[in-house]
Length: 241
Image (cartoon, rainbow, N blue to C red; front, top):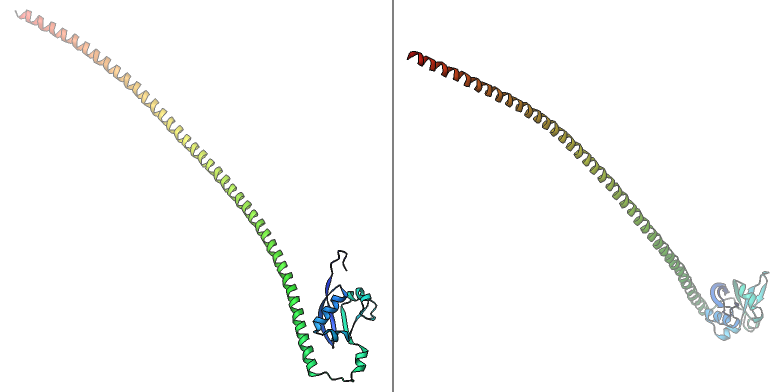
């Protein structure tokens, strides 16, 4: 019995009529015998004619009794045998009736099917638990991968944004530099042209002044000549009179 009072349970191999039959028993003498009776499909009368045996830790055969049940529960293989009194009451006959054979075959088949179903359920449960653990692990790995991908994408977007911003800044600076150079060149060219126009204007102004002076001198000279002509003409008129 366990310390908490709960009955342990295990499956033993019961050798009965040379057949190995799996039987699930509890750690309780009466319940164990009842499980064997049900597994072998025996009546209580038939059960009373059987002896249950097991091998102890030293390998010695022991008949199952309530006093040694704890040792028997630790054994993996039990066996049945007919009580000697029953053997003496019955005639010696090595042959088994067809009915007994069919019953044993049927019982063995049913017990094997039951044992196999239990094992299959245990195996299925283990695989279901394993699959559930794998699902949880896959889900956790998927969540980690999604977080990693999200972080990676954010870093890529951030880098692209920074690179694009830096490239735009360079383009704007180059554009401003080119515009500044062009404007400076145009201003310098305009200043040269303006200076040139100013110099031409000054030269033209001088030329106009000189021309004006010459015209004034010519006019004055013409006036003098005209006065002299008039004086000369007047003198000639007086002489003719």
